[in-house]
Length: 274
Length: 339
Image (tube, rainbow over all chains, first blue to last red; front, side):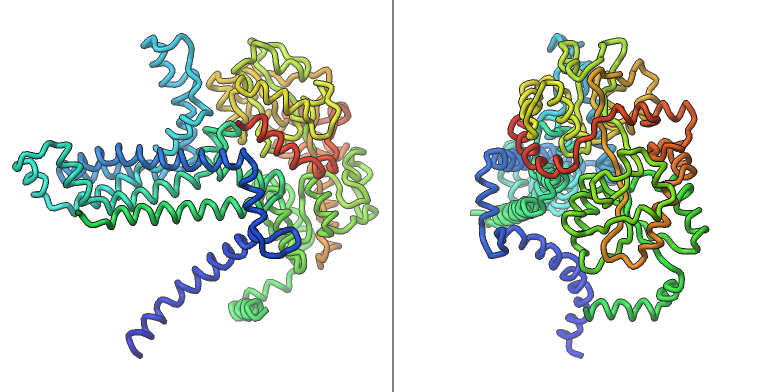
């Protein structure tokens, strides 16, 4: 047996599984969005979808929140990852454990925790009232802000873990060398650390962005009907209107957005230093 | 086809085929409270018929979609659905008429449960009312119009359109506003104008209890099935007695077209409809009985939709109205309320 055929044999079960169990059914489902009422190929469903202002609004909100969550996770994530990599090996394990821990808890429970924190009598509002920032409790729950916070909490660990592994591959001397040569900390970060870890940033960014735009429970619980996102709109179409076709249009849009984010971030990551 | 043959051959080789000697009945039901059904319904029925029940679970619309997808080769023999999903199934030719003469418990059902979608395509096995619960120390509620009292500004939760309570909410609010059109424009416009004063359009029962517990809300529209959970909070909360009545919903049983086990399916349905089984499942606060002879303790009755008086007070939303208008409701909701 040649190496080639052995490789083919080894890869066959996994490939068969993915094709039969994922690509085929998803393909069949998505095709539905490209047919008109009579069954002929057409883009009518997409034209219809974009002709509804609410749909476009929802698409923008999903993109905006996805981007904001990714950016916020990157900023907080770099700070945390730098600190983790700088700490002693034993506390490093502990910190990483702290970030992995919430990932082991169901997103439902994690999301409900925000209802406790952000509510009228929650921690945030108690502080706001005590500090005299407002006379009455702020309405944070069931707003875009609440969805944003919930999503950052949900996906930040993915960013931190990607950045930690990228930073661990950074030669320890480069930052010291840059400092010795007179670079400020900001310069060190922007000109040394960022370029050398951007692959990790790209991986983390794709994970966070894709997760944020496709999350269901967090926008449903923290935003509800008031903050409609593509994923909650999809559920609406299926559960209320029994409209699988529009749902498959939305699914297609989500897939395209995920792939576009992936392509964009990979491109950013692979640009060579000038 | 070849794939299916291969799978069958594999099943035979592995000895799974041996189970075929025992008759199998596949039922499609809601996922909730399966332990109670297992104990009071499935296990005793299996013991009685010497057959095996295969249980498929999911929400109603999702299981309706599955029935449609497997139309030509149905795996399910009997399904329970919402009344309007069952009507849709009948119109799409997915279910068969029920020979009600074979159901010994048929005459004991409340009138509205006997032929809820017409032509004997379904029988109701449980129903619930939809009403208002409120904090008795904060506000007084005696009609659907009271939802818009100034005290409830920023203190009210309503069900989301994606829940079974969504259309019912629109129905009752529309009536209370004197609405005249089946697109419930009056209700949608009114709720839309007050949407900023509504704390949340909730989706899950757990959200409802949490909102009361954290003092976020003082009133909410909900199905009676959530009432036991809210009562457990030990707060001054009451189920409102409404001068303009309550609405509600019904779940029905249907026979899947093409089933090879119709006789057995009918036996199972009849057993489920018996006063004995309905009483036991009701005692666990799972389903309110549609059999008039079912008896429950006064304590359990307080949590259920129980008794002839309560049954009579419910104004059901006609299933055909739901099918004809749900897309308009959803679009109106998204246009006026969800933004």
